Amino acid sequence: MDNLKIIISGGGTGGHIFPALSIAGEIKARFPESEILFVGATGRMEMEKVPAAGFRITGLPVIGMPRKPGLSTVRFLYRLAKSMVMARQIIREFKPDLAIGVGGYASGPLLRAAVARNVPALIQEQNSYAGVTNKLLGKKVQSICVAYEGMERFFPAEKIILTGNPVRQAMLNITATREEAAKHYRLNPGNKTLLITGGSLGARSLNNAVLANLELIKESDLQVIWQTGSYYYDEMIERTRGTLPENLHIHKFLNNMELAYTAADVVVSRAGAGTISELCLVGKPCILVPSPNVAEDHQTRNAMALVEKDAALLIRDDQIGQNLFRETLSLIGDTDRMNRLTRNIKKLALPDATVRIVDEAIRLIKK
Image (cartoon, rainbow, N blue to C red; front, side, top):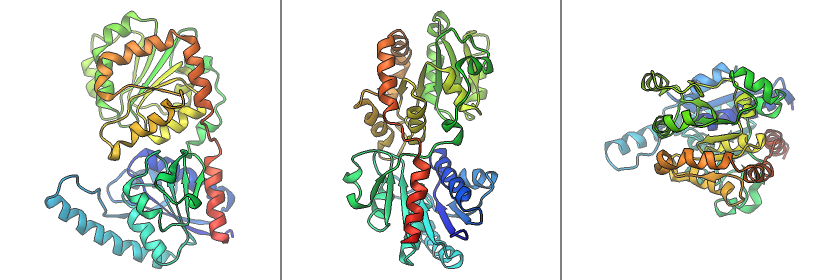
């Protein structure tokens, strides 16, 4: 089976791309001679990240469905039709043994083309609430790898396999001590540390909440690692000029996220599926602030899946300016509550997700 040909399709955000690359890496580790082709959406971040990881990618012109009818709908339908034609051509020419969809605009056309030509296919649904595309594809593919229980609401039960979400390899092999992580960020390992992150691009509302609470941060005993995201870094530097507390450490992007998690006592974060999977693995008490700007409000649903198990706290995006730091300080001052959240979130960790997904992929090919 060493000469496998596999297509992995999807992207749009790091939450889709990192799992896709983890799956590809596991396939390559088992079958070094395998050929893997990624199919993404033209102009999206996968077209840069995938080649940087050493894999070949081709792009489809597909775009997201507009929320309101109009000229944008015509453009969407035209690009969708063109993408379907291109996807069929890719399947004919590449002749894959298997197609894997990880979510994102390109997954729909590519997996539809694959199942139409009887190519075995599976989808990896990262969220606790399935998107429209994956719900439709779920009726046609052979297997659906999920990260949350109760997904029978969206997919045929006999196709569902609870695997968890693949995470970055660095998260699986954290060897650094708290002292080493604190030294990396020039922190005092004896002081309580808060990590605030809105993801690699950033989250304006989280950043604004920090700005609104500079005085509270300054007066606290907390050390704060603040990842602003690449979109907002320059603006945040400018807006904190002369007012940045010494205990607030500002970063554009955290290249060693595993060290940031290790240094932190509490994490404040968006509720993307990949981020939640990482938080479960590292077992950190966390306050989740779901983004209100995602399809079908799936970040709130992701967060609630943890809140209902007493494994995380949730604060709505429109409440963080007033409540976020007061809630954070309250949590950090309550050791019993922090320990309870840590115990419960660790129970949800699924560290061998990538292995399980690739096991299922190989089973489908053999079948």
